[in-house]
Image (cartoon, rainbow, N blue to C red; front, side, top):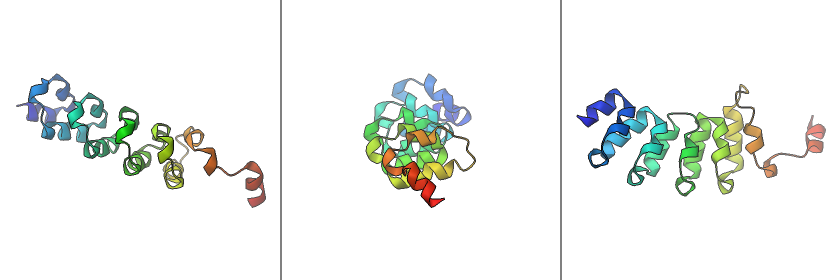
Length: 132
């Protein structure tokens, strides 16, 4: 009954009593709407579900604990939504990840993405002029 409700409407999970929520129900809900990760019981917030969630919607990374953030998870999030770079812990901001954010923003939809790139990856202005 609850499983069918979530298949029809992912947000139905928010009306199900905790004792009836299963891993399968959580997987279906998060795969349909990644933002539901913030509504799951902690025992269901796994690396697998976090990865599913960030691939489903914008800015989901901000709802995930830094303890669960890995380079793989952050890359998946940034490939989906460049501005999620804002919610990547500094220790995970690698050159590859920052480049992924810039390449994801190839149409300039996320003008703020550059401000979340650490200075260590941005060449000095003098160097940019010399390269031009």
